[in-house]
Structures are given as structure tokens and as C-alpha cells.
Amino acid sequence: MSDEVRKYHEEDAIGKTYDLRIARRLLRYLRPYWKLAALAVSLTFLTNLLIATQPYFTKMAVDDFITPKRVDGIWLFALAFFGVFLFRFLFSYVQEVLLNHVGQRVMFDIRTELFTKLQKQEIAYFDQYPVGRTMTRLTGDVDALNELFTSGVIDVLGDLVIIFAIVGIMFWLDWKLALVSLITIPLLFTATNWFRKHARVGFDRVRTRNAKLNAFLQEYISGAQTVQLFNAEAKAKGRFREINDDYRNANIETIYYYAIFYPLVDFIGSVGIALVIVAFGFEILGGFSAAGAGLTVGILASFIQYSLQLFQPIRDLSDKFNVLQAAIVASHRIFILLDREVEITSPAEPKKTGKARGEIIFENVWFAYKNEDWVLKDVSFTVNPGESIALVGHTGSGKTTITNLLMRFYDVQKGRILLDGVDVRDWDLHDLRSNFAVVLQDVFLFSGSIENNIRLGNTEIGRDRVEWAAREVHADEFIQKIGGGYGSVVKERGAGLSVGQKQLISFARALAFDPKLLILDEATSSIDTETEQLIQRAVDRVMEGRTSLVVAHRLSTIQRCDRIIVLHHGELREIGSHAELLAMRGLYWRLYQLQYSDEPLHPMADPLSSIHRSEPGFA
Image 1 (tube, helix red, strand yellow):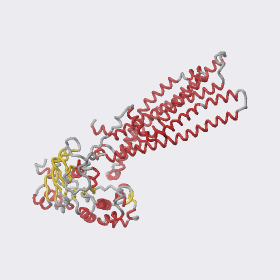
Image 2 (cartoon, helix red, strand yellow):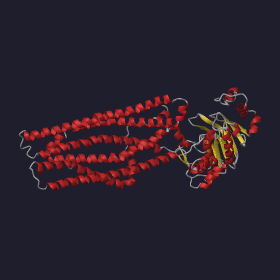
Image 3 (cartoon, one colour):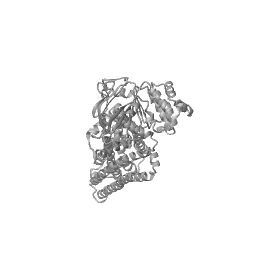
Image 4 (tube, one colour):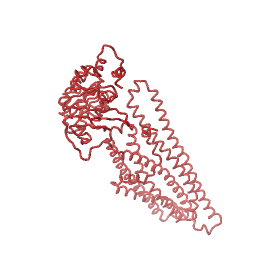
């Protein structure tokens, strides 16, 4: 199995986990709330002790009032019985409130820590792990921990308390009947152990299939337009049916073990009660008067109730064990993410902070996303402050990679990248990226208002600056026409806005943040000619006085750049102005001829593919 496949199926590889270190780490999240947790545990003990007294009240009712037909003191007895159950109700209520309060607090802390970790992860992490599975960490796995804190550990402790209390009272009432009642316990533990082993496997399967289902749904819902465009609904439905069927079968398998276990426990419990009745009959009715002199009908009634109560917590323990196991496995997955080292971080002592002048130097840069499959090969160039540079080349030549490396979304394997004479790895990461604004071909807009999408939560950018930036890039015209203006609601990913409108909002965002360096990555490749003219004016405005890197296939958008860098198979082949490159009659000249030739090109053709075929030097 490849590393990629192994990472994708990391849930399947976790398996059985009994790590005390995980338990200790989980206790760390309880530490801030230990007083509330301790009070909840104390109330659990009291509640379960009160539960254990119920059969004894039955014994007293039968022996002290029903059998002798006595009514003296019955009201006091009834009041005591009512008081016990009233306190049981109150203790149980307060315990549930406290446990859920603690559980929700712990979930809040873990989710916050997970989200903070994800925000710091380098982009390479999101290249490797599907978003759906990451969402499962934040939802399903954290919910499993909530079960652990609210009904797992505490209920296990409560069940143990009630088991010991019941066994103790039974031996106190009559040790011989107590021994008879416990004869079936080995059978019960055997059944419980069988259920525990098989159900654990079932729970693991359910969680792994759920993660795969979430990953599939996230991917195909996000790509619904593409699926419909290529009429791939039937194929997507078939694939979803397979994953959904696998998830259903995992749940049915788990239910199968429940369907066997619970009736089996009830049957074993019935056998135990039958044995108690038989033993009682032998001692009372079989002529063993001396042996059964201390036995009463009330004791028999209480033993029957105690036997029923005894089997319930033992049965629950097996179920709670699976809750514990599911929580441990979920914790293991969560801690894998939390323990994952963030490879791209700020240095302990940054050599550079604050605003940049805008000088960029690439020195013999080599970079590969995987092993030594080099995307950039020994690339070197210099960009002066305030200069505009265009990056040209076929898809996969390394244009966008250059911009990603400059902002340290990835780190180079060889060579170095300097910003203002300082290696970008020696910059404070926050300050480094705050010097950049990026306008992409596929503009990402968040749910909220247009104003918030321009300022992106930066409280230092006021409403006046937002409106000024929008006017400067000619976005104000369409914003004012929308109902609500700057306060109008933007749907998820900007649904309802045209590509051009979203691009103008992204240019307003870039101008509002006033960066020293601007990156335009195919920012005008998906719009019509009329909108392109409007956006070109926005481009010119945003680029004023800034160091700019422009990635584009359409040469009409880059001819006014100071210099153009031509990349081919990850190598820098040519650099110069538009006129200089045309005069060289090299790669750029050939690309220009292909784009502006009267001879039509196939719409899917790569303009540089013919260069690769016709010039043997470009291998």
C-alpha cells in the first residue's frame, strides 16, 4: 500500500488501542473542571446507593406490613420510601446537568484546539487529507469523547458501585441465596466478553465507514456543478450507493450483536431468578426448616428484584466498555492530528518582521511536492521593489508554485528565497504573509456580508476604507445596486454573484489591506472581454506602487508588466520585457504567435506543447 493510500485510510490502521497515555491526556482536559466532575461522581455514588435500597424496601413492605397485616407505622414507611426516591431524582438531575456541562466544556476546548491546529497546518496537510475526514475529527470523534465524559466513565463507576452494593446486601440478607444468585454470573461475563470483542470491531467499522461517507459527500456536493456538467450523476450515485451500503452493513452487523446479547442476558437473568426460587422452595417447603428458619417471603421478593438489578449494570458495563473503546480510538485519531508537527512555523527569533520593501530574490530554487519529482529546477531571478513581473508557461510549469513558495505555503528543498534580503524562512510567518495580497481565478467568498468579505474580520479596516477600496476598483457600482449594499448577504462561496463581481470584490479586498506585494493568479482568465476591461482597470489600480507577480495564460493581460518570466518544465527559459522577448524569437515569441495567429487552435490544446515537440532541446 502506498503512503498516500495508507494516510487516506488511517482510520483502518488504528485498530485496537489500550494506551494509558491517552487516558492521562484526556484527564488533562478535565483538570479545569475537576471540582464539578468530583461533585458529579459523588452524586453518582449516592444515586446508585439509593437505587440499591429499593428491593430492601420491598422486603420490609412484605415482611413488616403485608404478611402480618400490620398498618402501624405504614405512613412513616411510605414517607421514607418517597423520600429516598425524591432524593434519587434530585441527585440524578443535578448529576446529569453537571456531567453534560463538563462534557460540553471539554468538547468546546478540544474543538477549539483542533481548529487552531488546523489553522496552523501547512497547505501540504490539506493536499494529503480529505476535508470530509478532517470534519469527522471535529464532529464525530469529539462527540465520542462527549459520550465518554457524560455517560462513559461516570456510569461505569456508578455501575460498579451498584454491583458491589447489591452483592453486599444480598450476602447480608442470606448468604446461601446470594451464592445461588451468583451462579449465573460466569455465564453472564462470558456473554459480555463475546459481545465486547465483536461489538468493538463493529464500532470501529461504523466509524471508519462514516468518515469515508463524509469525505465522499463533501467532495461531491462541492463538485455538484461539475458532476451535472459532465452528466456523471449516475456514476456518482453508484459510487455513493457502494459507500452508503458499506456503512449500512457495518451498522447492521453491530445491531446483530446487540440483538443476540440483550436477549441472552435476559435469559441468563431469568435462569438466575429461577434458581433463587428453587433454592428458596427447597429450604422453606422442602422440609429443611432449620436451614430456612431465617428466610421470609420478603427476602425472596427482594432477591428477585436484586437479581434483576444485578444483571442490568453488568449488561450496561459491556455497552459502556464499547463507549470507552470508541472514545479511546477517537482520542487516538484526535491526538494524531494534535501531535502532528507543523512543518512551516515562525522561527524562534525572526530576523525580519513588519512591512517589507518588496524586493524578491530566488537563488537556485529546487522544489518538489513528492520525493524528487521536481516542479522547479534551479530557478533564479530578482524582482525589484515596485516592479511587476509576469509568469508565463504551460500548466504544470511551476508558475503558481513560485507564488506559494514565496508566501511559505511550502518550503524549498534546495536553494533559498529572499524577501528584502532575508530568507523567507527567517521572517516572522504572520508578518511575512501580511505583506501579500492574492487574487485568484477562483475567488473564495465567505458567508456573511460584502463588507465583511472585503475586510475579512480585520477591525482596523473601517467602513470608509472598505467603500474607498470598492470605488477604486469599480466594485462600488454593482454593490450599490444590490439590495442592502455593503451589508447585503453573501451566500456560501459567493453563490448568486457573477465571476466578474467576485473578482472585483477580491480586488477591493486586496486594496483595502494595502499590501506591499500583490499576486494575481489567473485573475482574469474566466471572464468576458467587457468585464475584463473593467477588471483590467482594477488591476492597474491595485498594482500601483506594489511589487506584483502576475500569473496568466492570456498574454493580453501581461504585456504591460515590466518583465516576463517564461517557465518550461520547471526551468526558467527566458526573462525580459514583452518587446525584448518577441525580439528573441524564442519560447515567448512562439507562444505569442500561437495565441494571436489567424489559424484556429483546438480549444484544449496547450500552446507550449508544439514547442516541446518541434524543438528537441526542450525535453
